[in-house]
Image (cartoon, rainbow, N blue to C red; front, side, top):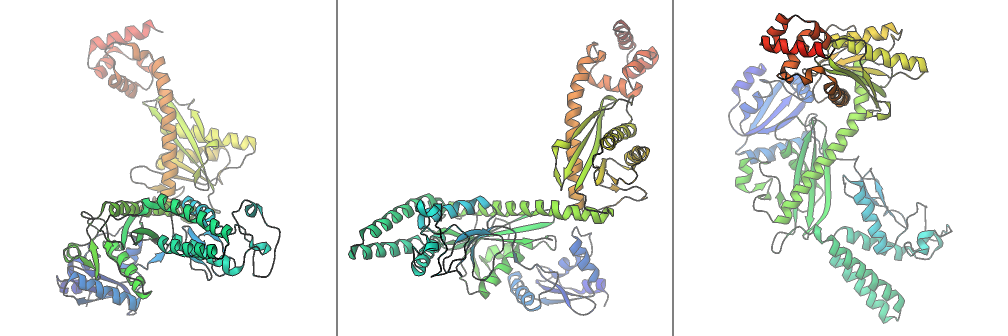
Length: 601
């Protein structure tokens, strides 16, 4: 059955749809409140996502399963995805690029450190966190409270690797490298530090108090006093960490708080675990093509809950932002059998954590977008423009003037995708009378690369012109006049965001989320900002020097009309009275203007 005919036969009922390729394999599984409307949306509009467009092109047949409700459809969808793992469904992936707090529990004498690779054998991780400074501060606190080694020595019990370091002498390290502490005693300390990280302060304090009493009974008063001091420090740290207690008296002590951020066709999903009324863990997940379907947030939650169930974790209530879930879930008060907590009626501490989850997701996503913009954007530009090498050095030009006055240009330089301001340059256009954008570009580009050639300096890998085909051709003329035909150029027009290339009849039109376009836009926007700033300075000086400024009855609008029609102050001075009257709308103004200009010659 043809796809369009198949779509017409779909019911307006809740259920699950399975999109298959020509070979019969399932490409995508989704759930819908109304099957016919949801499936038709893939075909009756242009999809923003390249991934979705690729999916639609491969669909050969569509099957469906009707469900009793949207919630039931969600459960069916989850089971089918788990069974078939379709290529185009979101696969919940922990962010491997964000930092984790790690402890090397597989060693005889473990240490705490920062890592960006979770899941290594012999390593236990906490996180991930979007902010590295939080991990550094936490490690410093743990060192102060529990004393363990800083060094990266490969230590084994019975094998000494002297000498002890500075931290041993200031009582921040117990000195396992010289055998000053046994393996069992050291690992007991690490276990207590882990309890502290897990927020199990009561269990930790109970253990330490029992150990302190044991030392006291054995008349080991020095050791008992050391534990007493440690208990005091932990109590102080617990008071500082009290801000992480997010529930009030009587509120639930166990809950998962979830939020999502979307940007540049990607999404980040943050989930905070609250246990015993304390924030004990955060999970960050990434999806690099977030435009697969509208129910993105629901897909993330479903995948996370399925992962928890597979690992045997508890299933506490769930708090999400208002409007994130369908009305049916909210009315039933549950999502995949998890109780839902309303954001409107939640405890104030939980609402603060909900905002924090959203902020962390946005921060994590910004870091990912920046990394992709610089790393993937350069590679994408090289491929797109067929450059011989990665465009590590990009320069861009733009011009600015006001009806031919204060005619200026600017050049910015980007190194490895980031602004390199020591190479920025400004130009006052000298050879152009009136308003001629093409000639201005030609002069600025020619002056810049004539100087670099004369000084024997390296040329950029790519020159970007702010403008269209005309500006690009003007820049090409300047380059050819210098004999620098090998220099690669492109132009980016503002309104349509079209990329014009030398020798190409039609401009390139890119997906707005493509990193090549985003990086080129950032370069273009920076040179636009820079030249406008310079132009504002020059325009202010031009106003102070302009004879038109001092004429009564000639304001900014009339000045602009005069300069637009005649091109320059000298041309205005030489104009006939009739022509000036026509422009100014008044013969009296024209006479006053001519009298003033001739008086100030």
